[in-house]
Every structure is written in C-alpha cells, then in structure tokens.
Image 1: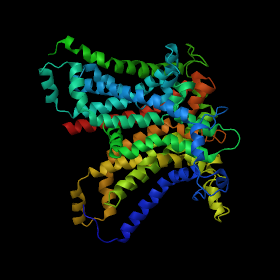
Image 2: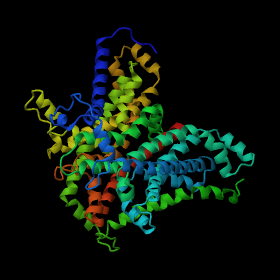
Image 3: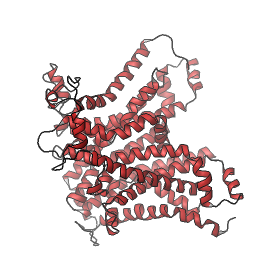
Image 4: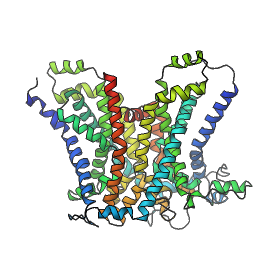
Amino acid sequence: MKRPARLSPARIGLYAFLLGAAAFFLLPLYVMLITSVKPMEEIRLGHLFALPRSVTLEPWATAWQAACTGLQCDGIRGGFWNSVAIVLPSTVLSILMGAINGYALSFWKPRIGQWFFTVLLLGAFVPYQVLMFPLVRAFATVSLYGTLPGIVLIHTIFGMPVMTLLFRNYYASVPGELFKAARIDGGGFWRIFFQLMLPMSVPIIVVAVIMQVTNIWNDFILGLVFAGREHLPMTVQLNNIINTTTGERLYNVNMAATLLTSLVPLVIYLVSGRWFVRGIAAGAVKG
Amino acid sequence: MKSKWHRWPVHLALAPMFATVLLAYLGTVGWSVRMSFSSSRTLPIGDFVGLTQYVKLFNNERWILSLQNAAIFGVLFIGACLVIGFLLAVFIDQQVRGEGLLRTVFLYPYAMSFVATGLVWQWMLNPELGIQATLRGLGFEHFRFDWIVDQDMVIYAIVIAAVWQASGLVMALMLAGLRGIDDSLWKAARVDGIPRWRYYASIVLPMLGPSFATAFVLLAVGVIKVYDVVVAMTQGGPGTASEVPAKFIMDYLFGRANLGLASAASTVLLLTVLSLLVPWMFARQRAAARASR
C-alpha cells in the first residue's frame, strides 16, 4: 500500500475527524477508569474529566467484596463466579449443538431439516418477551426454573440459531468430496463428525467461543428472569448494586464494579481482535 | 445408499433442534398469541375475549408512550449508527496510519454489555457531578445538559449511549463491504475526472446496499428488543418518560401480573419484527437465487 508523502488539507481533515471520533469513543472508558480510582471527596468537586490527584484502589476492593445490594454487602464477586458457572457450560453446550446441527444439515441434508432451520433462523429475531413467559411456566413444571441447569439450557436454546448458522455456513465451504470419501470408507454419522469434521472446525469453534462467551457474559434479561436468586449473573448484580443503593451513592465503587463486569468481554475483545470481527461478520452477513 | 435406516442417526442428532423449534419457538409463540385473546391476569386462563386486550393496549397511555419512544429512539439510533458507521468505515479505508488501533477503539463499546453502557452514561450525564457540572465549573455557568432527568429529553440521552455502543458494529460491517469493492473502480473513476466524494456518493454507496440492509435489520431488531440499556440508565424514568415496549411487557408480565395485556403487547412486537424481517429474507433469497443462476 502506498502512503501519500505529504499531508494535504483533506488528509488533515480526515485525521481530525478520526481522532475526534476516537476521543468520543474512548471518553466513557477514560471517565470510568479515573472515577474508579478517585476518593469520593474528589468526585464531589464535580470535575468529571480531571485526572485524580490521589489514586486509591479502595473502590475496586469495595466493589469486589463489600458493595451492597439492599442489605447484603458481599460485593460483586458472587456475581462473577455465578457468571463463570453459567458461561462455561452454556458455551460448550451451545457450540456442540450448533456444530452437530450444522454438520447434519450441511452433509446429510435431511429433507425436513431445511424447513426447521428456516424457522430456527426466524426465531433468532423474535423478541425474548414473546417466548419468556411460556418458557418460565414450562421450566417451572419440570423444576428447572431458577436453577443453574435451567439457565444453561435457556442460553443453549437462544444461542442455537446463530450457532447452527455459523457451523452450517462453515461446513458448506468444506469440499463435498471429503465427506463422500469418508462415507465410502464406511464412516458413520458420529464417526465422521468426531474424527473428521470436528478437528477441522477449530477456526470456527474459536469464533463461536468468542461470540458465546461475550454474549452470555453480557446477557442481562435471561439471567434476571431464569437464573434464580442463587445464580444471578454479574450484569444483574451490577445493576442491583448501582440502581438500588439507599443512602449515599459511591460513584467510584460503581465505576469500579462496572469495569470489573466489563473486564471479561473487553479482554476477550482485545486479545481476539480480528476473530471477534469475524464472528460479527459470520453471524450477521451470511444467511 | 438412500435406504431409510441409514438416516436415523441424522434425525436423532437433530432431535434437540426439532424440539427447540417446535417447543421453545413455535409452541411459545403460539401460546403467547393465544393468551393475548384471553383475559388472563396472574395465571393463564383459557377463555376467549376477542380483541379486548388489544383495544385496552392501544388505550393504555404507557404503551402509546413506549411506542412513541421506540419510534424516536429507532429513527435516531438507526440513522446515527448508519451515518457514523459509514463515515468511520470510509475514512478508515483511506490508508490511514494506525488503522488497526482506530478500528479497535471504534468497536470496543460493542464488546461491552448494555447494562455497563447504560451505567457509564448515567454517570457521565449525571447533572450534579457529570458533564454539566464539569463545564459549569469551567466557567460556562449556564451550560445545560440534564437530558437524563428531563422528561422530554431523556430518550435522546439513551440514544447517545446506544449509538456509542453500536455504531462500531456498523463500521465493521461497512468496512467488510468496502474491502469487497474492486480498486479498479476508483482508478477508472479517477481517469474520468470524478472527484473522490462523488465516487463514494454515486458508486460506493449504492454498492454497499446489501451491507446497509443487513446493518439496518440488525439495528432495527435491536430497537425492538431494547431493554437492558434503559433499565440500567433510567429504569424507564423519570416517571415513565423513557418507557420502551420491551420494558412495558416485562413490567406487565412480572410486576403487574397482567398476562393477557402483556401477551397482546408481545404479539404486536412479534408482528413488527416479522414485517421487517420477511421482506429482507425474501430479498436475500431472490438475490442468492439470481447469483446462483
């Protein structure tokens, strides 16, 4: 790629626009960070953008282990571990389901499969509110409502459309001859899946893991409704801590808690880079 | 090879998907639609009251308000995301320095949850200690930016937060579209003496049509689903000023125990989604059929 040697006025305008936009996008992160290390006295002065005069890590400690929701003052760490307990099995299960579905649809082409797949894709766009109440009742009937397996199953159900789409599209790019050769060698349904297709799927599995961990970690409404009091995910606890506090609001603790909650998806995003974008493109563009 | 017994593992493997589609999607939708024709309050009742719940719904001020908010939010949010996302993508595509870093910066909010987004902006827009107070402290004593506590302006405050979160997504989609356009087009345009802006307005923009359609559908569905960011940022307030349809339904389902009315509202949402979605899927399928021919 050639770079223009000289900066023309147009280029200067271009960079000014991009840097201005970057500042707008970075501003909330900056404000979160500096607010979270300022003592409350400094915050009360009302200089939102000023750098802290004295840095304290106490808000972070408080947010992690002592911030209150109502009468309980255990911080956000409980929510963190709840989210971990929800995200791990949900990610594994939803990806496995997606891979099996995608493989069966792509290579074995059952006739009614295509019809179901179309309905499933439409289902990805249905507002949760339409499905929520009947699912609550159904889950309550089989004692899954408000349990860890229940919320894992919910994430598997709601993740199925995109995961199936992701793997179906990936397997569509695998040469059909490969599958035919495996069939001629006497491979059955599961053997071809586990020994041939799954090992070939590593790139798309990475994309799927990034997508699912981020989505499930960031979920609020499903955790709120289905997880039950014992397993409330971190996002729900964060909202409870910040929006239901009585007495003085500790803005530095609030911002530390918000950052803590955002840490997992942000780290995934920064580490995964292009893979994250690939997930967006694969989930959104093809269809 | 086509004998039937070969195929039973296929159907067995797809059984969870079949069950999900039938029970979790079709079954629940059917149940919700059925409930919207009943007089159910806390518990589902199997009676039939015709369109009563729909009449009540559209006479409900809070629902009308939430629809108005969704309309304002939808137009501004989608419009702003598309414009900002497109501009960012075009400007980034000019072989600028630090392209990777800029892309990372523009997209990182999309990795954050709506809850965190709402809470950060709640803090920044806090009139006593946020942007307003800061600028007043700098000498602009009459500076006003208290949208978040202003009944007439609060929905615009939510638009700002949501645009911040989602316009990077549009940028990523547009950038992928731009990279798919052949460089020789610009070379040909330049030979003809066409200015750069004209090239983008008349040639690139129409070619990005499919990317725009995809971004539009994703954002529009986001508008219909919008819930978390409102709950985190304003809890629907001040008063009910930032009420949105999804929150209205949640409140009537779980707080106010009016299953019939909530089901009517969710059926209206569902029909809105389908009216957006079906033309889009249809258009894509036709485009795909044309491409394969």
